[in-house]
View 1 (cartoon, rainbow, N blue to C red):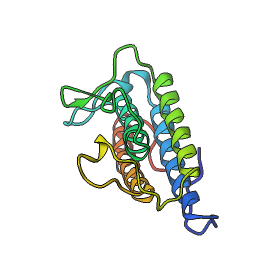
View 2 (view 1 turned 90 degrees about the vertical axis):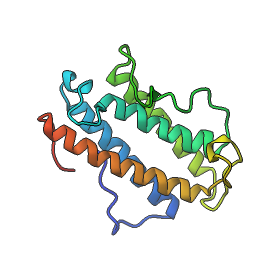
View 3 (view 1 turned 45 degrees about the vertical axis):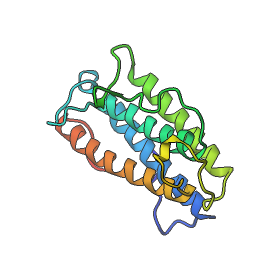
View 4 (view 1 turned 90 degrees about the horizontal axis):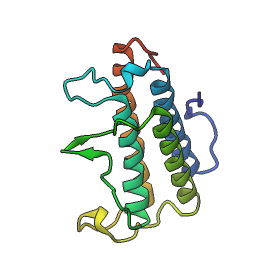
Length: 168
């Protein structure tokens, strides 16, 4: 388990702080999903209907949309590939191991991009911004941190209802 990035732990830069939090949240999601029994991975315990595997692919696509498609302005074939019929989706052949590997690979890409750019740098123009001015890398990272924190909280509840691990 990745250690929580305590605010009292010195960091060399704001960039390092962002990356520590993203790594912590990403690995916490992986730990929670990895601790669930196989039948719980494709089962929803909430009225909204999402499953733990769908959450994994959603978070991977969130990073893809904000870093590659947004900040980098790259052409991404399926930026909304985590959705079908206006809800999160995971194919029947996609496994926990595949989705964890994809999430970690996306995280490694995010880290490489963040390390290569200044937080004040403005993202490339492109369709991610929906006609608005592109955001700075710092704003994108704030968004990713809140997205992970919010969804990890959701997953905490689902894991507890499924008899999985509780707490941090």
